[in-house]
Image 1 (cartoon, rainbow, N blue to C red):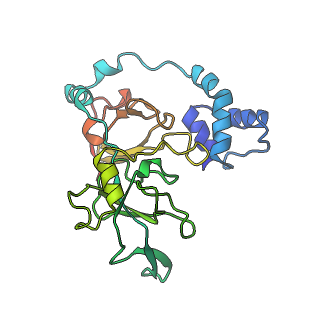
Image 2: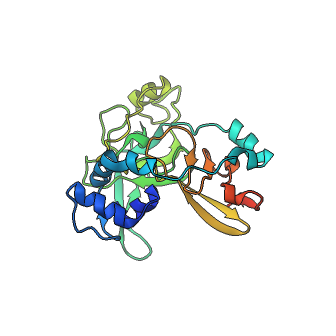
Image 3: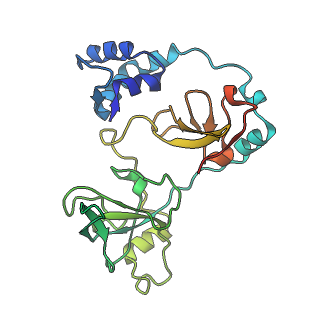
Length: 259
């Protein structure tokens, strides 16, 4: 959920304007720190988003010409992140962490390994298309409430950062045969989640080091937008630090990827 102040920052306008527009769609008495549901944000943008964006000042000319040759080359050669099927498990267990808090945990033997398109689930793909070995995300809610696997038969309780690679012999690799067949055919991908369950804005970000200082760049575009991500200051990227195109105010500064 976004606050009124965060929505105003996304639109590059004042919080007073956002509060007034919220009142016009029936959401009254909002404050700068009031949290707004995705439904309210969606209604606000549907009613007033285009009008707010039309009032923005035009971008400074000559942006591409001011970027250095390396940035221009990287921007031209960059590739879209792949949309991949991930490994998922239908069975998990519970345990306690070092602070004795109850946490979800993977089972040593989780049973059949399934495939899932995490990007089309309510939680979304927590790794944004990057393969992250050893990473795991647990779906909330009671048993049998998680999203279904590609096979459509089982509800998943955990999704891993690794890509699901269908085996020639799924039974030998303990893979769900239907998931393996669907993934091998390039099928099983989901439609994006319903707007009620996802943020209306992109929410992708990139960490870069500018003159030795780590800076976080938030994408200010809509969710499911086309083309590269763009920060409010004009910086752009599509994959990450390797194809980062600096904002006009950053040209000539020392920019590297942040760990």
